[in-house]
Length: 187
Length: 150
Image 1: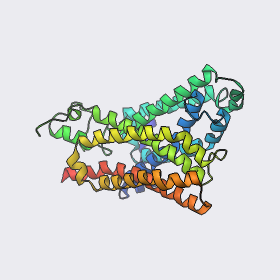
Image 2: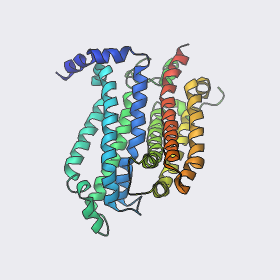
Image 3: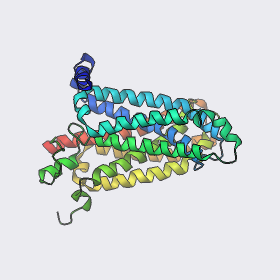
């Protein structure tokens, strides 16, 4: 079912157009990483403030509330680019283990939001009144940092399981006959 | 080759270095971008650009060091290819400009203040340079495939 949906998606006119466009994939991948670069630090900043590791001159609510909107905008922009890349090669992505891990990690981010948004992120004003943020808030912040870092690593991994986002490093290992895994496709 | 680079003997070294590189530059560029968005009046308006710079500069420099050093190790795996790669040369030019701009003009505008027009211009130049570095970096891999196949 999911596979047929993926095949249908990549055969829509929009994605056919993007696939045929000169350097379409590279440009959208660059935009994806540009969005991550411009907005990911908002997450880092809010979480570091909750952990008490940075921005300590400012109140927790000030940082958490002010980064909320940029975080959402950044996520929507990066996810849009991500979806466009997915649609261009949906069938390949469907079989890609790192892509599956990445989707699973996004589901965990959703769970994280369900669990901690109410008690931590949306009640930053209450955290200001305490001398020290409660353990729950620090745990939420730490977990968020770990999840997003894992998403970056899984995202980079996607490019290693089949062309086209293929690394010259693996191409050379292959030429020398040192490429161990059969999962590594030729460029 | 007389000396084999140990990074080239493992399948995992390169992807792991890249993860450090991506996480490093994402935080480095992101913390600079926060100040730029503030200069543009788009985010974090409760703080001044100077306050934000003071509070994020340590994070910027640490993550920049992580990104640069992992980048140097990545470079060492195949220096000839990078030397011939136009995207790499473009990226390094933009990177040097971006770092130079950040610690001179950008810094002066943030700490001594400037007219709104100048602030907006400086923020746009800074964002433009850093985004160009990212674009250059992505295109390295795709140009290198073309170099490899020739």
